[in-house]
Length: 250
Image 1 (cartoon, rainbow, N blue to C red):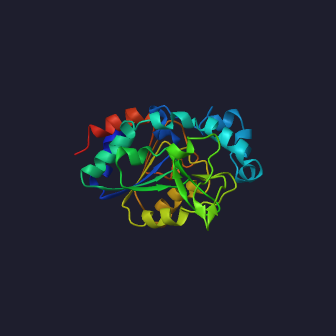
Image 2 (cartoon, rainbow, N blue to C red):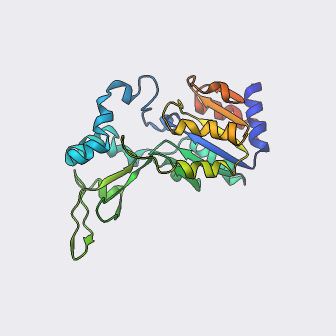
Image 3 (tube, rainbow, N blue to C red):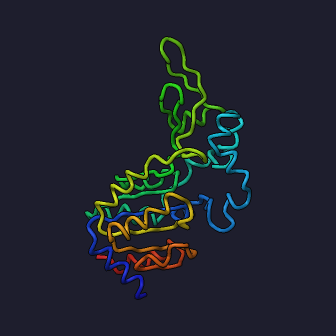
Protein backbone atom coordinates (compact mmCIF):
# COMPACT_ATOMS: atom_id res chain seq x y z
CA UNK A 1 0.00 0.00 0.00
CA UNK A 2 3.01 2.30 0.35
CA UNK A 3 3.08 3.10 -3.37
CA UNK A 4 -0.62 3.98 -3.41
CA UNK A 5 -0.20 6.20 -0.35
CA UNK A 6 2.73 7.91 -2.08
CA UNK A 7 0.57 8.54 -5.17
CA UNK A 8 -2.28 9.89 -3.07
CA UNK A 9 0.08 12.26 -1.26
CA UNK A 10 1.31 13.69 -4.55
CA UNK A 11 -2.28 14.07 -5.80
CA UNK A 12 -3.32 15.75 -2.53
CA UNK A 13 -0.49 18.27 -2.84
CA UNK A 14 -1.07 19.08 -6.52
CA UNK A 15 -3.17 22.01 -7.70
CA UNK A 16 -3.13 21.37 -11.46
CA UNK A 17 -2.82 17.74 -12.55
CA UNK A 18 -1.95 16.92 -16.15
CA UNK A 19 -3.50 13.55 -16.98
CA UNK A 20 -2.43 11.47 -19.99
CA UNK A 21 -4.85 8.63 -20.72
CA UNK A 22 -4.95 5.70 -23.12
CA UNK A 23 -7.14 2.75 -24.01
CA UNK A 24 -6.68 1.08 -20.61
CA UNK A 25 -8.84 3.79 -19.04
CA UNK A 26 -11.85 2.74 -21.11
CA UNK A 27 -11.60 -1.05 -21.03
CA UNK A 28 -13.76 -1.23 -17.90
CA UNK A 29 -16.47 0.51 -19.96
CA UNK A 30 -16.41 -2.40 -22.41
CA UNK A 31 -14.29 -0.71 -25.08
CA UNK A 32 -11.51 -2.94 -26.47
CA UNK A 33 -7.89 -1.98 -25.92
CA UNK A 34 -6.62 -1.45 -29.47
CA UNK A 35 -2.91 -1.31 -28.66
CA UNK A 36 -2.00 -3.61 -25.77
CA UNK A 37 -0.90 -7.21 -26.23
CA UNK A 38 -3.65 -9.05 -28.07
CA UNK A 39 -5.48 -5.81 -28.93
CA UNK A 40 -7.40 -5.26 -32.15
CA UNK A 41 -4.48 -3.73 -34.08
CA UNK A 42 -2.26 -6.66 -33.12
CA UNK A 43 -4.85 -9.15 -34.37
CA UNK A 44 -5.05 -7.69 -37.87
CA UNK A 45 -2.45 -5.20 -39.04
CA UNK A 46 -4.44 -4.53 -42.25
CA UNK A 47 -6.77 -2.43 -40.13
CA UNK A 48 -4.11 0.27 -40.13
CA UNK A 49 -4.35 0.50 -43.92
CA UNK A 50 -8.14 0.55 -43.92
CA UNK A 51 -8.12 3.25 -41.25
CA UNK A 52 -5.71 5.44 -43.19
CA UNK A 53 -6.25 8.77 -44.88
CA UNK A 54 -5.01 7.12 -48.07
CA UNK A 55 -7.78 4.51 -48.01
CA UNK A 56 -10.41 7.13 -47.17
CA UNK A 57 -9.40 9.09 -50.26
CA UNK A 58 -9.28 5.98 -52.44
CA UNK A 59 -12.41 4.11 -51.29
CA UNK A 60 -14.47 6.40 -49.03
CA UNK A 61 -17.64 4.29 -49.06
CA UNK A 62 -15.83 1.07 -48.13
CA UNK A 63 -13.78 3.06 -45.63
CA UNK A 64 -16.97 4.03 -43.80
CA UNK A 65 -18.19 0.43 -43.71
CA UNK A 66 -14.93 -0.76 -42.20
CA UNK A 67 -14.66 2.26 -39.88
CA UNK A 68 -18.07 1.60 -38.35
CA UNK A 69 -17.29 -2.09 -37.94
CA UNK A 70 -13.79 -1.67 -36.46
CA UNK A 71 -14.84 0.99 -33.98
CA UNK A 72 -18.12 -0.80 -33.20
CA UNK A 73 -20.00 2.40 -33.94
CA UNK A 74 -23.40 0.86 -33.18
CA UNK A 75 -22.24 0.44 -29.58
CA UNK A 76 -20.66 3.87 -29.06
CA UNK A 77 -23.80 5.34 -27.53
CA UNK A 78 -24.10 2.45 -25.06
CA UNK A 79 -20.69 2.99 -23.47
CA UNK A 80 -20.61 4.77 -20.12
CA UNK A 81 -17.83 6.32 -18.02
CA UNK A 82 -16.32 3.94 -15.47
CA UNK A 83 -14.85 4.61 -12.05
CA UNK A 84 -11.52 5.77 -13.54
CA UNK A 85 -13.25 8.49 -15.59
CA UNK A 86 -15.37 9.42 -12.57
CA UNK A 87 -12.29 9.59 -10.32
CA UNK A 88 -10.88 12.37 -12.50
CA UNK A 89 -14.20 14.20 -12.47
CA UNK A 90 -14.35 13.91 -8.67
CA UNK A 91 -10.88 15.45 -8.34
CA UNK A 92 -12.09 18.37 -10.43
CA UNK A 93 -15.26 18.65 -8.34
CA UNK A 94 -13.07 18.94 -5.23
CA UNK A 95 -11.44 22.03 -6.71
CA UNK A 96 -8.35 20.69 -8.43
CA UNK A 97 -7.54 21.76 -11.97
CA UNK A 98 -7.58 18.63 -14.13
CA UNK A 99 -6.31 18.83 -17.71
CA UNK A 100 -6.75 15.60 -19.64
CA UNK A 101 -4.80 14.77 -22.78
CA UNK A 102 -6.26 11.56 -24.12
CA UNK A 103 -5.46 9.12 -26.89
CA UNK A 104 -9.00 7.80 -26.61
CA UNK A 105 -11.61 8.74 -29.19
CA UNK A 106 -14.67 7.52 -27.25
CA UNK A 107 -15.75 10.82 -25.64
CA UNK A 108 -16.09 9.28 -22.16
CA UNK A 109 -14.03 11.95 -20.40
CA UNK A 110 -16.54 14.54 -21.63
CA UNK A 111 -19.46 12.38 -20.55
CA UNK A 112 -17.90 11.97 -17.09
CA UNK A 113 -17.94 15.75 -16.70
CA UNK A 114 -14.34 16.93 -16.92
CA UNK A 115 -14.04 20.31 -18.58
CA UNK A 116 -10.49 20.56 -19.94
CA UNK A 117 -9.85 17.78 -22.45
CA UNK A 118 -7.52 17.58 -25.42
CA UNK A 119 -8.60 14.78 -27.76
CA UNK A 120 -5.11 14.11 -29.08
CA UNK A 121 -6.29 11.57 -31.67
CA UNK A 122 -9.69 13.13 -32.33
CA UNK A 123 -13.16 11.80 -31.56
CA UNK A 124 -15.70 9.26 -32.79
CA UNK A 125 -18.50 11.62 -31.87
CA UNK A 126 -18.42 13.73 -35.02
CA UNK A 127 -17.37 13.98 -38.68
CA UNK A 128 -16.59 16.94 -40.92
CA UNK A 129 -17.14 17.69 -44.59
CA UNK A 130 -13.72 18.00 -46.31
CA UNK A 131 -15.19 20.45 -48.84
CA UNK A 132 -17.19 22.98 -46.84
CA UNK A 133 -16.12 22.24 -43.25
CA UNK A 134 -19.62 21.56 -41.88
CA UNK A 135 -19.54 19.34 -38.78
CA UNK A 136 -22.04 16.58 -38.01
CA UNK A 137 -22.75 14.66 -34.81
CA UNK A 138 -22.87 10.94 -34.13
CA UNK A 139 -26.61 10.52 -34.74
CA UNK A 140 -26.25 11.93 -38.26
CA UNK A 141 -23.20 9.75 -38.94
CA UNK A 142 -25.14 6.64 -37.96
CA UNK A 143 -28.22 7.55 -40.00
CA UNK A 144 -26.80 6.08 -43.23
CA UNK A 145 -24.09 3.64 -44.24
CA UNK A 146 -22.06 6.42 -45.85
CA UNK A 147 -22.65 9.92 -44.42
CA UNK A 148 -22.80 12.72 -46.98
CA UNK A 149 -22.79 16.47 -46.38
CA UNK A 150 -26.25 17.97 -46.91
CA UNK A 151 -25.23 21.58 -46.31
CA UNK A 152 -25.25 24.20 -49.03
CA UNK A 153 -21.92 24.93 -50.68
CA UNK A 154 -22.59 28.17 -52.44
CA UNK A 155 -26.05 27.76 -53.97
CA UNK A 156 -26.05 23.96 -54.32
CA UNK A 157 -25.95 21.06 -51.83
CA UNK A 158 -22.36 20.13 -51.05
CA UNK A 159 -22.83 16.34 -51.22
CA UNK A 160 -19.27 15.37 -50.31
CA UNK A 161 -18.60 12.29 -48.18
CA UNK A 162 -17.81 13.22 -44.58
CA UNK A 163 -14.47 12.43 -42.99
CA UNK A 164 -14.50 11.23 -39.36
CA UNK A 165 -12.94 13.49 -36.77
CA UNK A 166 -10.38 10.97 -35.62
CA UNK A 167 -6.74 11.10 -36.65
CA UNK A 168 -6.37 8.50 -39.39
CA UNK A 169 -3.08 6.81 -40.20
CA UNK A 170 -1.25 9.27 -42.43
CA UNK A 171 -2.96 12.33 -40.93
CA UNK A 172 -1.01 15.00 -39.08
CA UNK A 173 -1.31 15.41 -35.33
CA UNK A 174 -2.68 18.90 -34.75
CA UNK A 175 -2.95 18.95 -30.94
CA UNK A 176 0.66 18.36 -29.89
CA UNK A 177 1.61 22.00 -29.36
CA UNK A 178 -1.63 22.59 -27.45
CA UNK A 179 -0.83 19.59 -25.25
CA UNK A 180 2.66 20.90 -24.45
CA UNK A 181 1.22 24.33 -23.68
CA UNK A 182 -1.16 22.88 -21.11
CA UNK A 183 1.63 20.76 -19.59
CA UNK A 184 3.47 24.05 -18.99
CA UNK A 185 0.71 25.01 -16.55
CA UNK A 186 0.70 21.79 -14.47
CA UNK A 187 2.38 20.72 -11.25
CA UNK A 188 1.87 16.93 -11.45
CA UNK A 189 1.84 14.42 -14.32
CA UNK A 190 -0.50 11.43 -13.98
CA UNK A 191 -0.33 8.86 -16.80
CA UNK A 192 -2.91 6.07 -16.88
CA UNK A 193 -3.76 3.15 -19.14
CA UNK A 194 -1.37 3.74 -22.01
CA UNK A 195 1.52 1.67 -23.37
CA UNK A 196 3.30 4.91 -24.36
CA UNK A 197 4.11 3.19 -27.63
CA UNK A 198 2.52 5.57 -30.14
CA UNK A 199 4.42 8.63 -31.34
CA UNK A 200 4.32 11.57 -30.89
CA UNK A 201 1.99 11.11 -27.89
CA UNK A 202 4.76 9.26 -26.08
CA UNK A 203 6.98 12.36 -26.28
CA UNK A 204 4.67 14.19 -23.86
CA UNK A 205 5.93 12.47 -20.67
CA UNK A 206 9.50 13.31 -21.66
CA UNK A 207 8.50 16.94 -22.14
CA UNK A 208 6.69 17.08 -18.79
CA UNK A 209 9.46 15.36 -16.85
CA UNK A 210 12.65 16.57 -18.52
CA UNK A 211 11.62 20.02 -19.76
CA UNK A 212 9.09 21.04 -17.08
CA UNK A 213 10.41 18.96 -14.13
CA UNK A 214 6.95 17.74 -13.13
CA UNK A 215 6.68 15.02 -10.49
CA UNK A 216 5.21 12.00 -12.24
CA UNK A 217 3.01 8.94 -11.69
CA UNK A 218 2.40 6.05 -14.10
CA UNK A 219 -0.34 3.44 -13.65
CA UNK A 220 -0.64 0.77 -16.32
CA UNK A 221 -1.42 -2.92 -16.37
CA UNK A 222 1.75 -3.75 -18.30
CA UNK A 223 5.28 -2.38 -18.36
CA UNK A 224 5.97 0.47 -20.77
CA UNK A 225 9.17 1.52 -22.50
CA UNK A 226 9.20 4.67 -20.38
CA UNK A 227 8.67 3.23 -16.88
CA UNK A 228 12.16 4.30 -15.85
CA UNK A 229 11.53 8.04 -16.24
CA UNK A 230 8.61 8.21 -13.77
CA UNK A 231 8.89 8.90 -10.05
CA UNK A 232 6.23 6.35 -9.09
CA UNK A 233 5.14 3.36 -11.22
CA UNK A 234 2.43 0.77 -10.52
CA UNK A 235 1.50 -2.15 -12.79
CA UNK A 236 -2.06 -3.03 -11.86
CA UNK A 237 -5.63 -2.98 -13.04
CA UNK A 238 -6.60 0.70 -13.17
CA UNK A 239 -9.90 0.28 -11.36
CA UNK A 240 -8.16 -1.52 -8.49
CA UNK A 241 -5.36 1.03 -8.37
CA UNK A 242 -7.79 3.96 -8.23
CA UNK A 243 -9.73 2.25 -5.44
CA UNK A 244 -6.54 1.96 -3.37
CA UNK A 245 -5.51 5.57 -4.06
CA UNK A 246 -8.92 6.91 -3.05
CA UNK A 247 -8.48 5.44 0.44
CA UNK A 248 -5.66 7.90 1.08
CA UNK A 249 -7.05 11.03 -0.58
CA UNK A 250 -8.11 14.00 1.48
